Amino acid sequence: MAEATGQRPLRKDARGSISRINAAALEAFLAKGLDASLNEIARAAGVSVGTLYNRFGSREGVIDAVIPEIAGRKLQALAGQVMAWPTPRERVQAFVDGMIEIQQSNPALNDAVLRRFPEATALIGVCDHTADFGRQLVRDAHADGSLATSFTEDDLIALLWMAGTASSEPSAPASWRRILDRALDSAWTHR
Image (cartoon, rainbow, N blue to C red; front, side, top):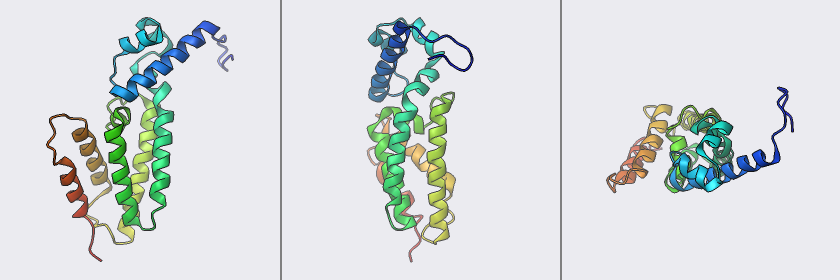
């Protein structure tokens, strides 16, 4: 299909190359994180790394071609699960627990949450939307009095950043999750 800019449609073999690159990139990113080798992705797709760069421009272009849709679906599903909880306190807790689970189980989404590739603008947009959702949850918990105002929206983001960093670091102390849980537990008001 020709684009509105007047570009000619891609040849069938070029479309096939893009499809193979997308599939190989998705597999590699989900398994190894967003810093997976572009050379390995190109090799798995049966193209040269030059073809990969020619088609996508950069690592961030490849990331934006395959990860935002997956990240968006997973994070949207989490938002739906979170909003099923009846109270703001339970929603914040469910959001934190769900985000940590996503970060621990998916290297690519952990890299996304940690914003390791800020030039992947489509992915950053998905992450911004999720961060805004988390900030609203904090505001809601402040409004109902269940969360101390000393625990800020930025504290939530920092907590998730620390979880992502610790969960991806092999030398992190085993107690990192317990410490993060205590940080959030200490922010709840006792009503």
